[in-house]
Image (cartoon, rainbow, N blue to C red; front, side, top):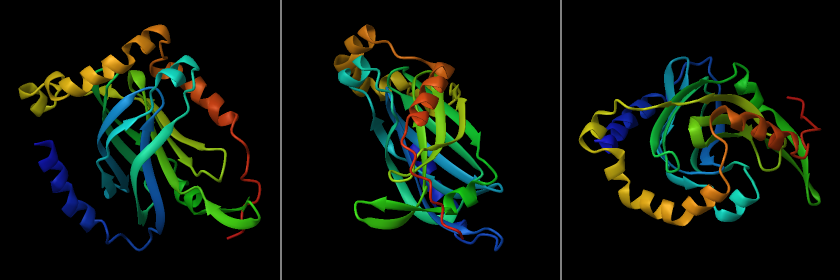
Length: 234
């Protein structure tokens, strides 16, 4: 049923290819991931002025292993996602399933009004012996235990990352499909494998939850090298 609902989104995305002339099309991507959990991302929906401008389903994404848990290495690892040319969004809705919490979460985050100019801004970055113009063109979505989620603007060459929004997602308890097929049955084998691999590590090295993540992730951003020192005049 969920896959049928996702297929129904495709005409909406196609319709969004024709956008109001006042909206500027930019090439940007979004990627999803975690820092101490394995997640199953069911929906990512980006909106601009109430119109759907991008949507994806990304499946499984994992950032958990015994070594990172023991070292408390909680950096976001964002992987799966998509890239396209479309207007910069002003809101994003994310739904995912946490293997650690055994819950489905959903949240809507308001993004900064100036996000378009933030994505469009190029920086002159030296990579080895070559100078390049590089933009922060990747909207990262990090999700972790307790429903904590961050949206941040990032690029591997342009640092630091810029926090766009954060919040605590609500657990989804009214999904009609799950009244017939509970998450525990849908993900029984995946969760069993996850617990077999990581439950002991979590017991030895318990992870933060909810808004306790906020200062930890702020510290990671503050420690990033600063390379955005040469903005290119547009």
